[in-house]
Length: 280
Image: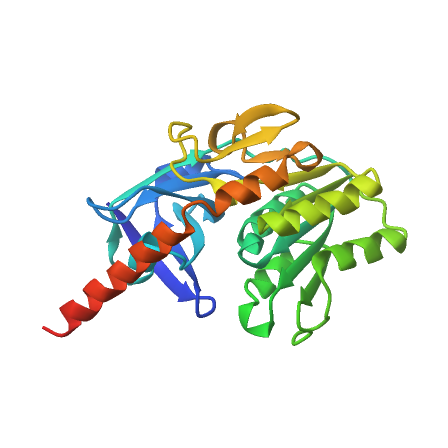
């Protein structure tokens, strides 16, 4: 059992939890993930390591309430326990280059933040672009400021700082003369696709994190398979980081929508059960 030491609502749909897991904290690095199970009956879900503290023996996870399991996890309080917390898994990010642009879209900023922090601590110059739907969805602003040389926050509707897409901001920085050794993009599949289309035009090496498509996290279910350069790879064991210019994004986007109806039904069933229990 793993104790929840801290719980914080970052916005109406995103929750941060700091978990007491000294063995995991001792080994994890930026880019890796953990697998947890909320209770004995629960499903296994992979979540990115958003941060860690080796001295305290803690690992921080950030997740969005999108289905039954994340809803049950969000209902947990400080001082309560999670059944299983396994990791670190996946390959750690390669820290290289002199100047990088790291892009996070929405919840992807929870993955972009530890990446930026690792590069920044290694002495690499980091421009961090964080894109959100609107002001209400902005997360980790203060943490991201400390993890880069320059933080650029953009919102789709212009309700906070600057109205732009992350691709607009990246192209602006490139045109201003910034010479990047590497671009890293983490967020919704469509966002990563268009970042890669842009960077291909400028011949900029681009790495994307395929964390969003992982399910089981062990390579057994095949749900996170992705075509990279014509070869089938699995995000959980071969990644989650891949060369974005080699990924068949259209294929991945089509597959990501396959079980949306079943996922929505599972969430509704859980809410109905909770309502019935509340009546007694």
